[in-house]
Length: 271
Length: 272
Image (cartoon, rainbow over all chains, first blue to last red; front, side, top):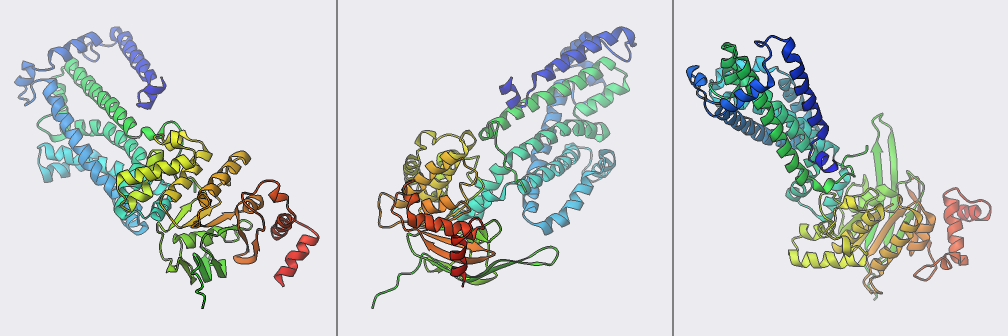
């Protein structure tokens, strides 16, 4: 159980999933089929339409199966989270070093971060068009804002005794960044990466719904128009499963990167 | 003509004033002038807030004096540097580096080749009794072991001057005494003629008497007494019961407001 938790995986989450599916089965006889398909029907649809489905081709979609739509969405999410993450983390670490820079940047970044995606989307579609860059920019922006906050907070909270110690050892600025700031802030930043990644799936789907030509969001938009409720449920569940799988892999990787933490110790400044 | 050796540490008219947010000035140090000879083990004793740690921070180059100068081995102190190793009150061992990587980190910063720095790190880990945990993560160690890692790190870095800021304050009685032995053993270096100079801040009178050649007493930012500890090394419980040491202890306690009668009078006379 302990090792599961170390990877960020809680077996009780699995129990929750089982209960949810049980509830679904229980509700099926009570709700019209047009509103709630059976779990079995959704599972069959997901398998049958995973690689190719002629109805999707008939809708004129570039993605003729869930798989290619998911691959497109996954690529966008990863590009946006990695790109936006790098920008956000670097900006957060830099601004943490100067109160003045922080005072100037924080209000701008945090205000922009509160703009709802439905408001931001038309501008990005106008500026960047309806190809993947628009969706990547939108998701990347929110990832950058999230990680800016996490990285900045991690750097501010890092116990200053580590910096003092490094200076007395004669560490250069580059060495302090490499050996102190990055590893010392890593646990908090990686926590932020998981939050940003979890949010990125939803944002990417919305961005695709609003104006993309491909991806799982575009597929959902087309299926909704055709009132194909089984295919719609299958698309949503496949997106959810993909997000959970990525989270498990990422949590495992991050646990390896921060294995020095074990279960004890704190890096934060107790001030 | 005999050449007077350069002191390892010189403080000349060093003052440090702070301005609080409410505009009130705080005088942490006032016109301190001290010379510490090479190889001396000097303890600074005083009540909380008397300026002990400020003095050490200025010596480490982590803080700057408002006026006056500090020199380490004749060179003006303006910034931290590997010539003055510091063991901090809080744990400063990097938790994301293994024990051996921590010990060799100072050498790495100075560009020492990896094989050489690993050899030195192993040597000092052996000397502080932590050779078998070289590959462990710091959070697997106890508080006492972490202090030993910190001590091994500054000694391994070869700093001729060592500054220790109440490093053992949080340790239990037994662990503290064991670490005193480790520290003194490293400092003595098997009776070496080239001992490192140590400036050790503490509020523990017995600790100062066990470790120091000389004890400086601070109060309200000033040095109010400068005492020699006349006892042989290594100091056992018996040594600490010698009349001369007991007299020094009484005097220290009186400075800290913990003694009455004769000792207090001695302190009053010293102040005249």
